[in-house]
Structures are given as C-alpha cells and as structure tokens.
Length: 565
Image: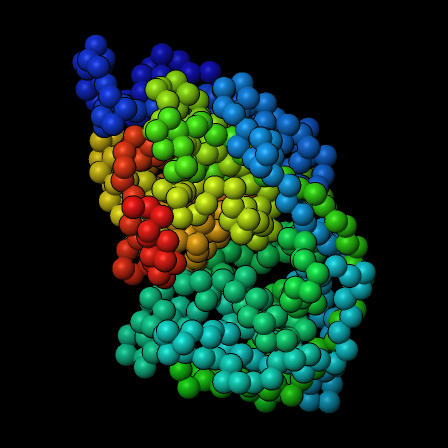
C-alpha cells in the first residue's frame, strides 16, 4: 500500500500534536508530551500482509506456519537492533503444549425420561478435550445443572452448595449472575452489573468443574452472553491446545464444550423443567444445583500430539533501571488450516487478529530504537496459542523471565481496527488502574477521547494475553477495537459499530480475517502511537502505576509492594 503526500500529511497529523512542525527545531526530551512516534500505516499493512499470507498457513502452533512466523518475527527484531529477550540469551521461549483433535465422526447422546436423543457435532454440541488421551469416552454420566457455576465467597455466592460432581457432567449458563439480572433483583450488582467478571469466562467454568471432579463441562451457548455466535464456537473444528501438565498435576475434564440453547431448552423440557425458570433461579444466591435426571454419553477418538511451541521475545535494555520492565505484546498465532468454507477457503489467516497487532508491536520497537536508550528495559513479546486460551502468555507469566513485581506495565495490542482514523480510542476493562488516566491525557494530545468498552458483558478484558499478567497484579492496558465501534472520522460511531459487527459476525476466527488492500490503517496507527507514548513516559520515569481499589487484582500487587520501593 503506497501513501500519497496528502495521506502522509494526514497520518502525521494523527500521531503528532498539531504544533509539531513549529516545534521541530526545539529540543524535545524523552519525557516531553510532544515526542510522538511516526507510526507508518504502510509498514503496518506490509507486515500484516506478510504474516497473513498463504506461506504462513494461518500460523497454527506446532505447524510449518509457526516456524515461518517465529523466524520472521525474530529477524524483524534483529534488524531493528534489539537483543534477544528469551531465556539464556535466546530469541524464543519454549512452551510445551499438547495438541488434541477429536474425531468429528464421534457420537454423543443424552438419555432422559426414558428416551435417548442423539446430539450432532458440531450442529447441536461442540466438544473438545485438553487431556493427553487417544479416546474420550463417557458412559451415562449424570448431568447436573450448576447455574453460572460461580464459587465466590468474597461476593457471598456459591452455586455448588457442596454438590458432588465427581464423574458427572456440569452444565453451565454462559456469563455470570448479573448478566441478565435487572435492578431490584436480590443479588443485582454483586458481579458488577452487565460487565462480565472472570467468573463469566468459559476458562473459569471448565477449571472449576475440574476442581470439583466433573468428567465433563458444557456451557449453554447464547450469543449475547458469550459475545459471539455459534460459528465462532465451532470454528476450531474439535481441536484444542493446552500447556503440557507436569506429572501429578490435576487433570482437566475429559470433554468440554458448548451446547446450543435450543438443545438445552429441549433437555429441560424432557426433564419436566422450564429452562427460563431455571435461569431465573440461578440469578439468586439461594440457587441450588439441579439434578436433571438425565445422563450424557459420548465416544470420540482423539489424536494427541506433543508440541514444542514458542514465544518470541526481544528487548531494549534499560540504561538506569534494567530490572524494571515495560512490556508491549501481541500474539502471533491464528487458527491455521481448517475445512473449506462456503468460499472454498481453508486458511484462517488472523490478519487483524492479530498480525496487525504484532505489526504495531514491531513499529513501537522501531520507534524506541530511533530515540535515546530508555531508563527502564522495554520488552517486546509475540505470544503463541492465545487463541487456545492465552497459553503462551500464561506459560510465561507462570514461569516469568521478567519478574511480575518489577513489571511496570503490560500494554497489549490485539485486533486493531482497519476502518480509518477515529476521534476516540476504546478502553477495555475500565476501572483497573491509573494507566487509564494517563492514556486519556495522552489521547487528548492527539485530539481524541477515551470511550469505555460498550459491551463489557462480553468480557474482552479476560480474553486477551494481557490478562495473564493482570491476574498476577501487573497494571495493564489492552488496545482492542472490538469493545464497541470507534467514533470514526468518516461516518462516526455508527460506521464504527458497523465495522465491529461485520468483523465479529463474519470474520472473527474465520477465513475472511485476511489482509485487504483497501484497509485504512490510519486509525490503527493512532492507537499504536498512543500505546507507544504511554510506554515511553513510563520508560523515562520512576512512576509505578497503581491498581484501582475496585480491581480484583490489587491485593496480588500489594503483596509485592516492597520490591518497588
């Protein structure tokens, strides 16, 4: 994509203050707000085009596409003049994974009220496994409806009430108890209103089922509560990844997945119950698990392969405080090769999600190298297996190369928008830390404002790699356009909403998330420049951003306060 003179001038007006030209002759210190990064939309486009090309085969972990993505990113960091940021002076960090693929020809059924009905995969039921096994067989396991499946003593909530789930199927509602609650209901507000808490995430539900001995965990899919449609649920085609467990570690459930809402409604009806009435009960703290007097059976062959995947890490060493780090990150993985879609295409390229985010990370690295060495170390990370449960970032955070207590901030870029310059930037996870006020102040220098996530019920704050650091107390920012339509210069909020709706409905994790020559990446350049500027201020300061009193992760951060004095 070539940029004409007029477009180049407009881009510079987006990422520099309006008076930058008049001040060009002045000395601009690293801490001066007038110092901005000249983020180039053409380079963002070029990098994305490469990573989302046929040669990278959708960048699936453990595939030839991974090898090419890791080699490409390593070479880009090397050319920029960064040094290896992985363990023992390497560019990469090995992440031991297992890759599982269930046989879609397997069978599943439910027996209830004297009859048995089959469940079609993936039309009625979507399943996968993250166990190292060659067969996932469940025979007549009792199904227990556990509501939202929340155990939150700090909120006075326990959906389980001591029920024995060993060897059973835990059937969950999507999201958390406040999602469909209204003011006046007894428990309204305990989970922050419609804004999803971590208790609403599928990862929490599967983990809680395993902790309680269940053999399977199934969530009833409803698009509003999940934040995406059934096409996104079934996109992986029965495959999954997990971090390889150490000997003796607790095993995950044997089968996990989702059930279409009409199937759940029919199951409750056959059991002599009303699904909507059960949902209303589940919104009360007095809810008790319901034995549906039904059993679940399944038999799926499983192909399991051990995979050595890799995170790519680079750094710019700090000259004064090298043990204090600011991290910029995105994920290199997408969904790889799948079955042909309606267009006959098989490569799920992950262009916006998240090749474009990584292009932003590389551009930030370029901007830092063009300036004076930072006082604090800047780390750049490209994670593996984000799409499979934030596995690369989670592995790194559980085995940190850079200690969490000395990490100043994590700034993650995931799925920037491609629809042109905007008057605002979307804030995901409002109320987490004072990094938000810093971002708002710097956005104002771009002539922009901050708009909180319009759909906090979708839980985007818990669905990107920054969360692996956030849950360990690190102040974070996530720049992601999917939290609500940006206020586009051309078309306003309505046009931004159309972009988000179209991408989410058609292209999210699908083959049509592909590079396009008509993308307008000036808005993405604005956001990347803003991310850079936040990190730059921190890199030349002694500031330690603080978590808000409302953040569920503040107690974790406070435990390491002495390390930052």
